[in-house]
Length: 221
Image (cartoon, rainbow, N blue to C red):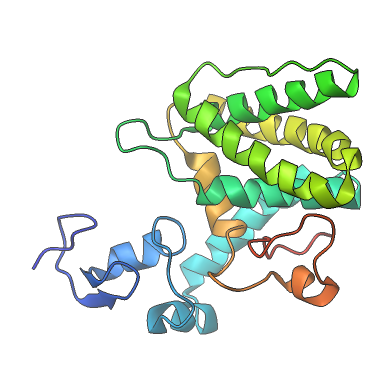
């Protein structure tokens, strides 16, 4: 039987998330990126305990790309950045309108502009140019609204700064590799948490303002 994820290789691994067998390559490359693996998956547990050398090198390169994005941000701004980044990593686009990095840049830029305008006392909802970007923007706005319930307007000010950094990173990636979702994939590899688990820093500190159970596990330097 062919793997339903790629329709190319033989399906040999039972995937508990999909409820069907997939090939080893799709299991390894789509794990926690395109496939929402349960925490008790034996292949997921094995990969964390004994990651291949090539995976370790990829992790090191990914972290080397993400950590500089946090430099210069306050601790609160960095945490907001990571929360928004984790939500973006998990975001699923429509079948015929996949999210690409330009959409991410649009969503972050429009939401940042909306928050900046509100900070000047003007209520105006800035819009995106694409529907996928609008969907992501709405999801990020909902997340920020939940965070603001506990922390108030200070979250909006920090979020605007974090979103501008986020927009810049996404646009740089979109310029380097147009019409792809390389930035989203990067976020997925580095920031998306294991399902049902808190990040290391979240587990130690408890839920700060607006933190949800999907907080990323990258430790802020």
